[in-house]
Length: 305
Ligand code: NCD
Image (cartoon, rainbow, N blue to C red; front, side):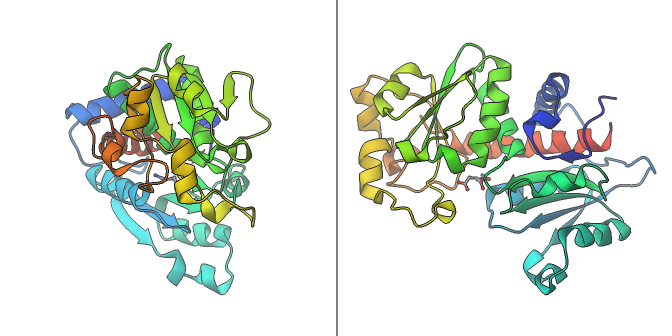
């Protein structure tokens, strides 16, 4: 029993032992070493698991839904837009109601940073953060680490350049918290206004793309989170692609045809060219495939600890 948290909000909610056990369990699911079906709660019954996404999602929500079904649990797609949240009911009341209906876990995406922290003292049910505002997206970072291992791109003694809107990226924040624990160096790169000001001293920061590419073994591209920018003038798509976008011609110029990761959704022609996305250097679909195994591992571990 490894005492996994009841509320998984941030990477720091997991200790190193738990992080390692999630990687091992993901690998077992991927290899088919564990028969699918039937996670049980302490009562012996199969849990009901809900997703409640208060912001849009394609990859995260569906990969959780598939992971839940593969584990043999009952899946409820809680439609926040059509719920009493729209009548002013609080998230806490909503979760208490779901828990009284027998829901054992809810995966929540919210635009409010740190909204899930309030449930840690007295959780109404098990909660996984599916992305909260600009805070964190821990399950994405975990599946990225699993993909880096699976594709033999690291992590030990390798460098990853996270390029783009680093300040608004919850994925970027989780990666900065996770990857250095596994011996990976992180460089944040982007235009000055996209770079965070208070950075831990194990993270490097540069506004020079060439420098980031030359120092790195993996490129991790981020979308410009336009919905999180307030009024400030943003570079046009063309300007951004010119300065910080990744295309094969640029990588060849620096003799660095590196693996390219992206959490999605990708804006083609902005942070990545179509040619780069269709090339063998693009690993975004490996991340998508591995996401199911990592999310199965996270859900199972949170029920069985
Ligand atoms: C990200 C998210 O929603 O935080 N995507 C994802 O979950 N795969 C990144 C983004 O929206 O740019």
